[in-house]
Length: 351
Image (cartoon, rainbow, N blue to C red; front, side):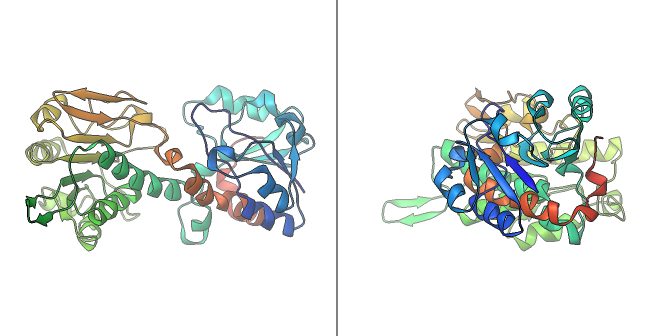
């Protein structure tokens, strides 16, 4: 089997689809791996390391892709760039198919079979290949680190001879994978953490990490989760009560981190302009849903903006801000998928 790994062309994308470690495993399974020169440099992985693992270093992307039967990528490649691959080649990556019908159709016409990792079923036996969870986990961590970097005060309580420094109050909106990691990271840094979510089961998870759960816990809330563990659509009356509680809570926070990112849909609006204006100058908001428009009314994707002294961080590709770790977490698609094709039928979207 000939496997190709090329440098990512997406602006600001420093991750790479396979590390030298996973290349070594693929070679050990009998595969021939071709890596484009410089493909791993953004993640501090050198060509010499790939070569030592058994890969062939190709001078160009075209040379790496020539005759490839499997192409591993982080983001969806341009169909035209795949002209040299073998007919029916398997293209595996985070292909972002929602709303990109023309690009996906072009992949199908390019005589390749596209496998979108976002469609991987989130079940126990597929956990090793669940890149949505691995990357969301890192986004939650990095969101707190970005907040701490912009926050012009200390995070933990400090009791010193010079006086007592109060801990930062941090509010995490959404207790999914990213939110739970954000809670854990903020606690490690010494912040007083609270969090909210519409799923009743999230309360125990938040409290297990040392956070305070904030929600209107009425009868509707107790029935707000499906049998599959997903949130139900709440009534307008409940949403109004929850919004009032949230607004009151946000006004007292130093840092707010929003995590409601839904694949294929615009991000739900959680924080209004009025809520931002209720926060004290010097406060920080990190919007982890910026790439889908943002959970915050004032978010500008890709930028940090300031309104009334409140900084709103709208970085996109947050997990890509720690590319070395993020690339290591993507190793599952490099080794797990080719070895578990029978488990991935739902991920096929082309050809």
